[in-house]
Image (tube, rainbow over all chains, first blue to last red; front, side, top):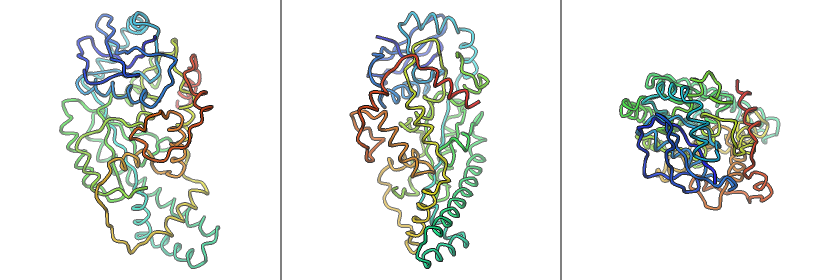
Length: 247
Length: 155
């Protein structure tokens, strides 16, 4: 039996009772000084399924609802509680305490925006005379391969313009709501926008209401997803100068 | 893709917990790491998530867009239906802008980490799982090198 590490919290943290860890095992604290590692027992040879990934995320999300937590990346498994205490908490004590102080009371909220493809295409054809004209000529011309390719390229360009405009609009709206904001690189993200907001727990009701308002005022082509609260994944990386704590 | 309704955005009053698609972006990619211990192998998942970031510009995408706009019925009024399935929004979120490419990639991810139960994240068709792939994707130890590599790529 091994020990899966979820994250690190200050010693006075009370753990949520309503959430199970990987392999439906109970989560428990391993303490060293004023630091506590959240762990659960795992069979290290069991195959990894989606439940394992979701359990890791949901344990951390349950903790961060009321407490500060430094999230571990999925996949850190140690041999025993003693190893966790000695080699993680004791060996990295100062660094971890500094980080906990830095992110005290902070949560991450993630906003992802996607386009409703039908709606985007409809708007594009309606608003863009060039696309509309070309579309008609493609249909009239018997839809040759070359013409369809050209039309598709034009459409892709139009979608790209909407994406850029919509991302810029949302960043403008979301930016002021958080203490900090991180935008996933365009090249990497799968969505129109993938934004992480760093928010103080005390500001949450205000921020939640503001995001709900943004959602109500969106153009029809845009859909938002609002995820959280999460540990400050996107910001802790940065706090470490782009480097993980141990590597 | 289901035409989600405008009213689906009303479900934003409170944030929701991470779905499978979200955790792939976060817990496999971010968070504190520790290298000197046994690490669970995530090689396959990391490769697949990189696959999922294929860019839009491809012949297939262009042809698909062309088909889609040609099929578009502009006389159709915006009869948005009932906000039946919040899952549709979730799925839309998982798919993102490169729907065609991502569907495939997402299926691969599902296939890879798919478990025997049908999680509500994936109502969609699931390809038959290949046991060989699953075997090779099992827990292998001491494989931190690949995740280090992918990290350093990001600068």
